[in-house]
Length: 166
Image 1 (spheres, helix red, strand yellow):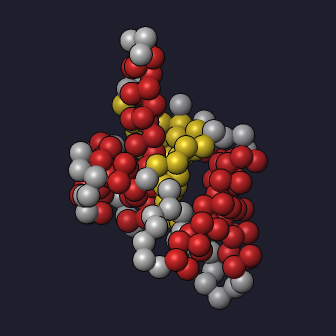
Image 2 (cartoon, one colour; image 1 turned 90 degrees about the horizontal axis):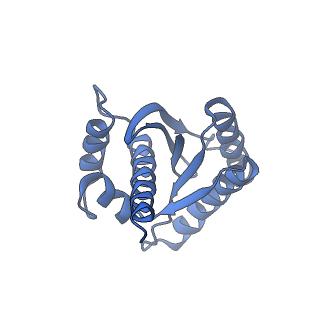
């Protein structure tokens, strides 16, 4: 089982791929997709879609998990982020990947035990969970790995409840 986690953004989209062997996740790949800044929004979304499609074709994930939009004070930023999320979700759908969305608070809770954890705490725990010898950088990639880990934990919890007849 392979899970592709995504921390979407129009300037920088973090991705992280983990493999599940038994109950433990292991690192497959991580990094960022960074569309050129001085092109139109449509071109940036196209780069995001195309690079994500190539990533999916190369790594063959079984499931896709994406961080949900954080609705902060800046509405314009939320709308722009929504466009990036839409391109990513469309790409996943075109590759027949089941997609799940997780709120940032849920991702932090799943990786650190604290829904209000700092990004550095998430980064540190991702390193520990995946037995990495260095911190995963940049933060966008670390966050994407945290999304994949969160999805794995949610799948494990659902499976455990189902086996108990709940």
